[in-house]
Length: 383
Image (cartoon, rainbow, N blue to C red; front, side):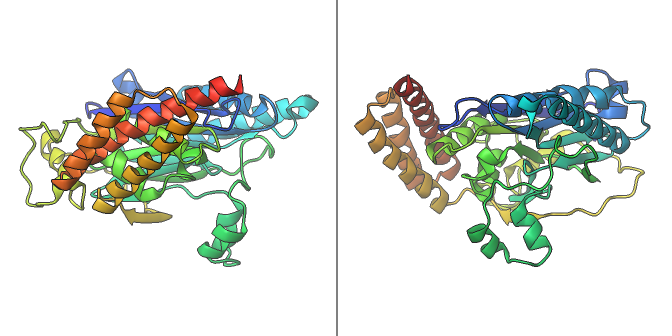
């Protein structure tokens, strides 16, 4: 990557539909000077706290406040050394607070960090918050879940299907705080291509929203819109946990439905986000890049799948909107019914014309309207 590469990013967080407070935190620290960029790059981070009362909230905040600061100020020579040291320092800080105060017992947090550096993308990771990359119509999970289910599968004790059915999702095996000597997973640096989209999230998003859905929204919409749609989609599916998402897109954003200057491509399905999708054309806008002098690191794609905007995806989410609308009517949610009806009608028309991206955008707006209304209804009904 280069200092002058365009990166478009956005973030969103929410308590969800069932929790009283938000124990998630996130951080975005963009290098403001070229020298800082050369040594430390841009940082994106998500943390999901654990502990009773406000203890988890404090733990995730300590991570997102201190890891970026300690990393940037570190005297270590390499980013890998610096981010590992920062994780261990903050893990020790959280552990110390938990040991010194009985009220803080059980205090801990996940932490997943993406560094965009001259040598590529570097990931530091502890816990089950995830880092994904979306590229050419596929979404790849770049981080390993430190959870009981994933550990049992890795040790060949259970198949993935058995683990999903028999093992609780929320049992994690590694976090910052409980153990003063934490092991930090490092991935990369991995090559970055123009049009790559990176998504970091807590399990409040990756639980109710499937990987192909994450990839379809992240790849095909501006990060601000994608964050809105995904967050409220998680809420409409129950919002059982806090939800946090950070999206970083490498390259300029041009609204594909209105763009007239995007380079032409040979793929006739590009507008629907299939392999080689429209975003690949941005490579020409960014120009050629010099290859790094450092050897490439083998990629560990812990999960990978296609994520096109398909008719099935649009239909499935439109049906979810229809069902939630019925609940909203019965429970008298404060919905802008005119706006909702307009989005649903437009989505149906566009779907009939096979303009799938435009249809999904309208469905996303409907999801956003209902998600916000549901949150307001829950808040007012509780009080």
